Image (cartoon, rainbow, N blue to C red; front, top):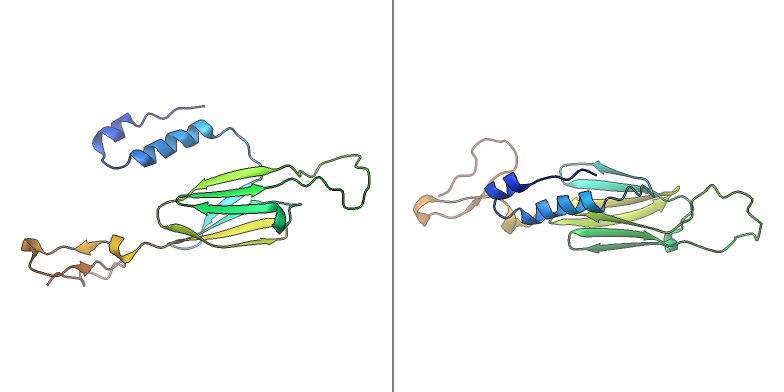
Length: 159
């Protein structure tokens, strides 16, 4: 396991302690458990999708919990035999699991679907208007104007 040293960055930044702590903890806690396998994809500027391969699990076997900056997906193992047959070889994993995903600020779960052995969780980032960049007038006599997000030039100017 490699250890990252963020000391040079900690000296020259303010307010990023949580990010550095998160990176260090993830490197320490990543024990190499790759079950169940998953993909994370970006589907737009503020849209993301997590896809977990959960073959053999039903919707009732999976618990998804979204907290502030944390998404936890748990699968509960079933002990029941559906047809009472004796298994001679068990090659399909049916063990319980827990996957944790650290979420950025303002990212929320939009929906979750289970189909064809894939659990799909759609996420969206919604930054409140109060947190978006604004132009500040010099000498404080003007009003605040929101900065446009597209590169449409200098349309927003302070009055």
